[in-house]
Amino acid sequence: MKMTRSWLLLPGLLFLASVAAAQELPREAPVPGGVVILDLGNSSERPSATYNGKPVLVVSHDNNWTAIVGVPLGARAGNHKLDVKENNGHTRRLAFSVQDKEYQTQHITIKDKRKVNPTKLDMERIGKEKKRIQGSLARYSQQDEVPLQLETPVDGTQSSPFGLRRYFNEQARKPHSGLDIAAPQGTPIRAPAAGRVIDTGDFFFNGNTVFLDHGQGFVTMYCHMDRIDVSPGQELARGEALGTVGMTGRVTGPHLHWGVSLNDARVDPGLFMTSEENAALIDSKPGTP
Image (cartoon, rainbow, N blue to C red; front, side):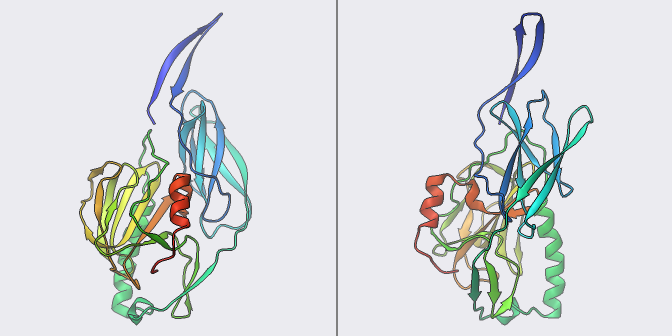
């Protein structure tokens, strides 16, 4: 979001006012895997904020500074704190509440048993890849304009919603930290918003993967791709091609796993989609996970 400044003259007072176009915000959902929106006031300069020690996205909205906080899937219900540091060095703490949410359970059968119980060599590879993946998802780059409304990255049907408690071959695994969209192999995947490619690679569980940096800790991830058509450092416009849908990594069929990370917390991508696109995807007939 591009900001401009203008000097305003009132009787006996001259002051600098920040003028900005209205910023579209995601839908608020104060639950694990959701988003909390907090008003930080209307100081002349952008304040900084942290949650659990991680920098938080701050945008201008309705002439105020607004914090967009990602709540981790593992967060407990109850009171949480946001630390806000003003440009004069003063620090204050804002309290907000997180409500409990019970996500559904999903049981999946994986034919390649190594994708459920990896070998020792597999685990060595997974350990190295984990650091690389976490580094991309925790990426924070200062940027004034952050696109918070996302378009659907691929034409398809929802196959697995966000937050599912998953069992692979009846073995409990981490909750589903993204949204799965089933589509035929080779279907184009497009950037849902402008961003810079952080990294690409072929990972044990995620298969061919792309990470996009949209600014201020807002990162999107695209997994199980057949073909990757971008390179690290490349700037992409909204709608520009990333590659194609595939079935690489741990999958049962061709689909895109689409993830959103906000202040290093995995949150529901549906909260950032326009209501029409979100409704169309959520109401679509379930496909292959």
